[in-house]
Length: 466
Ligand code: NDP
Image (tube, rainbow, N blue to C red; front, top):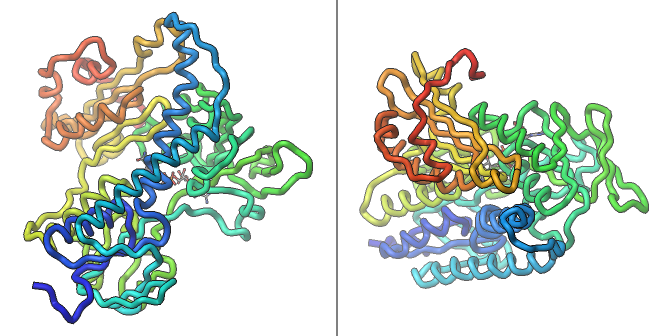
């Protein structure tokens, strides 16, 4: 039964993947639900993240495919890439999806407020534009994350840079883009722009991109960036950015190694932070971690019993499907009479470099720390398709096995369609499959993925950098 001293049973702040799922499930279970969104319904994933990014990956990939097709007998000519045409088609699709999210909320009976919401206290929400004030029994923080970049004190000229928010609003294709960072976003966009024919340079403070991933994946992606024509500068950061007059590339970046780079677009892909600034978490008594993330327990409950948080704002795993599951579990548990929490172990994910990365479970280094003995199976080869077009693309498939019980504890792939492969392998890993289970699974031939079940030779550990 609803407590009518409150305007809503649930008020959700943020209509991204996690917030929308939670609002919809709670409303379908009979709760009185409202959601507020300060930017656009759909959140980072739909509006300025996964979805438009994947379209850009497809656009970029066609460039290479056209060249490859010629070796397969097709008479095709590259007529150039119409960036405005592509962006307009992409934005139309993003608008359509945002509309679907909005309709789904409305159909579930959720009240939608398209403005910023902030806490006044642990049960009161104030909307910034209209000044409307609502009392809610439970409040869900689902505000996601926001790109982080250094302050002007740390990096003079940082105002000339853009982030992954603005990259989807470019009106013309850059001539020379310089990207700072070596994580998911930096690597994905370096491939995108290189594939679109843009002179692309990646500046990374470490020595090998994709910190935190399995070492073999990191080296494969690092080499793959260079093969794709990306200029990769390592162990270096930006020191200063200046405007230069009358040049096609109007910015000059000075690097910490003394080099200078010219660019017309500079993208900071230096990480994201939980979006809690100005939210009023202090007024509500919600505790935050040192990076501004909401501290939550397994049930996504914050330090205040009636306030919960899901998705990127909690600094757990920053992935859309995780936010969706967390939101679903919260709503089922609190309003649907189904008590469950999301299991954050063995979440498969992909990095949409070209070729893609697909990964699930432990890296070799993590497994070596966790277990007495680890068996490694890996292979590196050129996919069959390259035999005719002569491309330099190479595939990596690696299995990490706990020697004691032969469970496959990690699978790491760099390959075309690795994202698709790892989704299915994720099921086997979640079920606790052993190496023998992989071995007795018959191959599908001829595919790249068949190598996953035909790896018989253990890698000699001494030769494998952990
Ligand atoms: P990441 O944390 O992946 O990468 C940030 C990069 O910036 C790292 O290379 C880091 O270096 C570097 N960096 C951080 N601070 C500085 C600094 N002060 N100066 C120079 N370099 C710096 O963040 P992203 O923004 O790329 O992505 C955020 C998250 O979003 C990801 O972790 C992922 O969870 C999610 N995401 C998922 C995608 C997918 O599923 N395909 C796609 C895009 C994002 P170092 O390595 O040394 O720390």
